[in-house]
Image 1 (cartoon, rainbow, N blue to C red):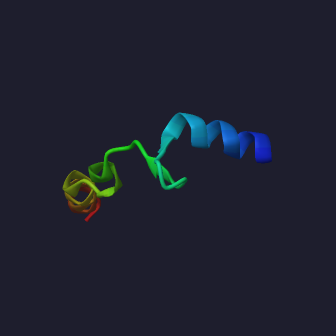
Image 2: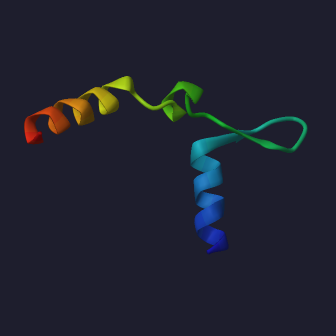
Length: 48
């Protein structure tokens, strides 16, 4: 399990001078897309 964590840390993050790892991912990817809700609303209309 530790090998997997190290692998991910090396590929998904960058180690800064303070020794901490910082994720390379765009923070905007954590946001939910509003389209998911609109799609759900459309599906409910078709069922009703």
